[in-house]
Image (cartoon, rainbow, N blue to C red; front, top):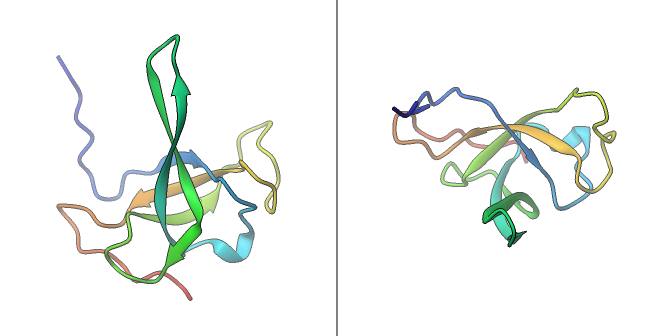
Length: 98
């Protein structure tokens, strides 16, 4: 059995490859592939901080900075960001903030 999460409003946590700031909330971002773990076979994807935009076709929209204990503060590289899929099959993308 598998669970498929297909809600366009599902929130995901992803780390940023750049110094994500509070002013970046509600901007749209692409993702970038980074080196995975060769032992576990797990791949890794990060929010591509240098590739943001307002276009509705951009993959993710940042909606907040994760409040998890141990998460770095805003403005630090690799901070965890809460995102939703912007270019979703069940929902038209939303323009990000400039």
